[in-house]
Length: 463
View 1 (cartoon, rainbow, N blue to C red):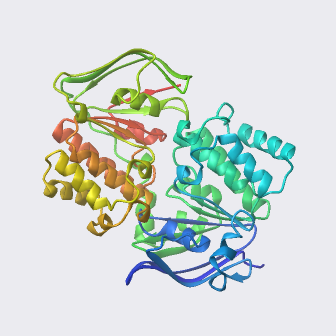
View 2: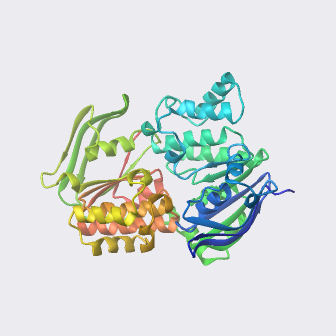
View 3: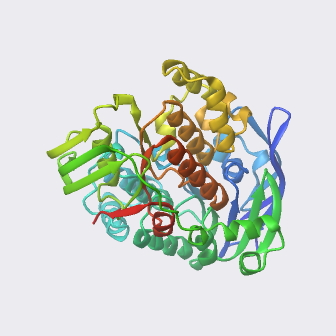
């Protein structure tokens, strides 16, 4: 059988430093390849190297052949001409894939119209079907900034697949999705090889890898540690690291030990909230105490992020009140954003951003470095801009930045959704330790019921 993608001895360098490789693999039509591994191991670099979208500071060595064409022989214009027609990508950060000034329905319809070469009427009907299939009814005329993270992920998925490219590269396609929509997206991904296409998926979820099957690659520190049939790798792995990944799934975490919470730091009474005129939350009450860990769950688009914004004072309620303890200043309530790239200045090196925050709040740099060390962030990453680190690395840096302010309340919106199971477990364990030691109240938004039940002191479900 011919190979849609053939990669031989692929390495990616930053200057003389090897970030990834060498890695070799091949994927045929009607086949699936899943790439797993630790955060920052280089998983997304593989997809970027295939597409030709590596940052200018990085370079790729090795051979990449797509549909029989050696990409090293093509000009950037010729490679770009393949996008949407021969291969399509769903990037890790949906907000980077969507036009912020264009409403959701036209964005998807435009792809059907100009990439799939449909008539205007055909494109409209195809878009309507895509929105219905992905449970996006009601979101058609919202701008990306008015979509929840899960909604934006699904709109980006619809736009990516509208061109019907035979090769699909999906980078963390299920993050930020509730269980029902998560399963639906995985089912749609599985249809790609079933209908004759080629699927390359980057994921940290073992359950997604099991459902998609095919071949699996496991990376660590930019190196290939295991490669083979999904059934074999995910059932009887040869590498101890792969076994650790399997064991670190949230359902295997120990349940949180109960502890005594302190004084009341925030109360919300009879909150009714809306976003862009659309009602979301009604009659919500909360009493939050120092050192307490609360998990907030519910389907995508139900208003979890909107609720965090109201608790942070970033959104005025339609009705009801949010009151902080008199001892709390405005900056002692910090929010961790669901899409960390949107919360960092894009052209400023990360070190400078953190130094500015530390200086503004009178925090010793040594303390910042301790947070970064506890979170497993290598100091060299701080020399880069936000778009030159992985989504998971940026999530951990955003946690360190929030801790630099000395918060009393931390509102965490899917703060570990881009992390591999081991890093996710260790990051939330670190957050729990610091919260208990410094009496920080944490409200954690998560779509994972196992994280909610095993990590938090109590659970609140929005419906």
